Amino acid sequence: MEAALNGLSNTVKNQAIKDAVAQAKEAVKSLSTNEDVSIPYVREKCLAAFELAFDKGNDKAAHYAVEGVQTFKEDRGR
Image 1: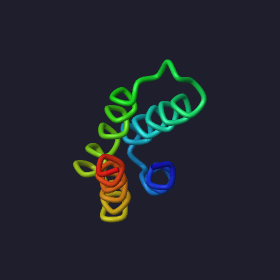
Image 2: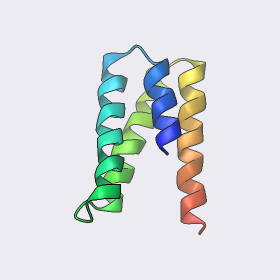
Image 3: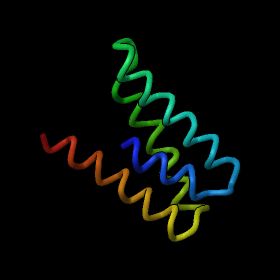
Image 4: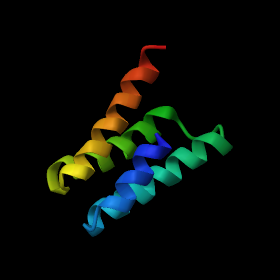
């Protein structure tokens, strides 16, 4: 997940996407260090960033968004 968010962060120029990615990265970081953060909250933040990338990003941003969504799918299959 972190790789997809980092790639997305380095690819986009749109400030709204950058802000959403920053929030998602903070949520992921909080999940790994604090058990009070819920998994649905982290998913919500990550999916918001990926959705913006699909809507307003370029092809490279969409690639990282797909990578992130695939990570969710893989995690749910376990």
